[in-house]
Image 1 (cartoon, rainbow, N blue to C red):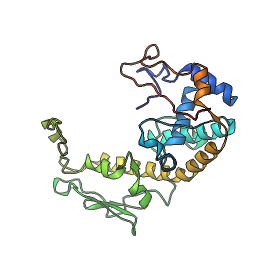
Image 2: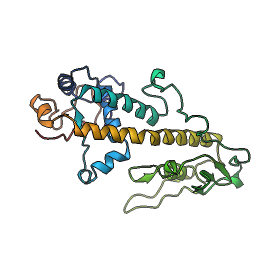
Image 3: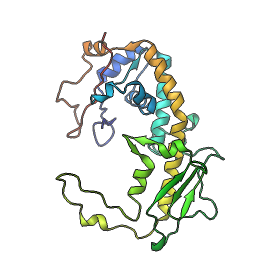
Image 4: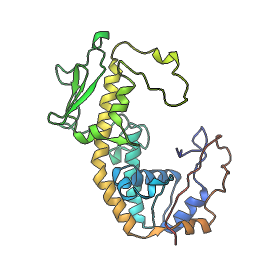
Amino acid sequence: MFPLWADNHGSVSNISATVLARLQDQIGQPVSAEDLFAYIAAIAAHPGYIRRFATDLATPGLRIPLTADPALFTEAVTLGRRVIWLHTFGERFVDATQQCPAGPPRLPDGRRPQVPAGGAIPNTPEGMPDEMTYSPDQQRLTVGQGYIEPVPKAVWDYEVSGKQVLVQWFSYRRKTRERPQIGDRRSPSPLGDIQPDHWLPEYTTELLNVLNVLGLLVDLEPQAEDLLTRICAGALVTQQTLASAGAFFPAGHSPAGAIEQVTLPGFDLPEG
């Protein structure tokens, strides 16, 4: 995890000021820590990034091509701010002028997932769901005895770090929540058995929020992949350029005021 801020108050950037200054020189416009954070989200938070760099990503480490084109940089920052707005369910990078209002993001009418009449998930112990299934023909997500639609297949299939988001989300709210013990890990705490015995209304609200966010993220994927292609085809800021300016923190160094055990972000950039 590479946090934007290196302190608990969100005042000490986890990105070297020298990096930002050097990028500003290369791109020819101001670059803030938030801008770079959003840029990274635009570049890496979509399947096209994985497809393009699959071979390189076999070795751990975040590899981000940094454009030297100010127009492309601005385009990426704008896109990345929307991505982060979605990832934080409308709590960060709020900007109504960029269609990022405060509050849970929503798909347009007609595409917005709903609980139809007769599709409510029972809130009784007997009706506590233990299974979630999907019908691509109906675009229906069935949760126990209830259901939600429309849910596109791309939303059902959406993965993060190789795990299906909806399946993971449901696994922590279903009736049976046991986790298999892996290796020498200690047995689960009895506290894990303390859980609601019925489906809570807020679970449905959360699920609708997740479905809307995933749908909007899927919408951004073609734009993000096209942007990545154009950035990789253009002029890039190289690792050598940043290193020669002393833009990287020495190994083991943290900025003043940083919280303990924060890993500082590094970038594997094109040589040259």
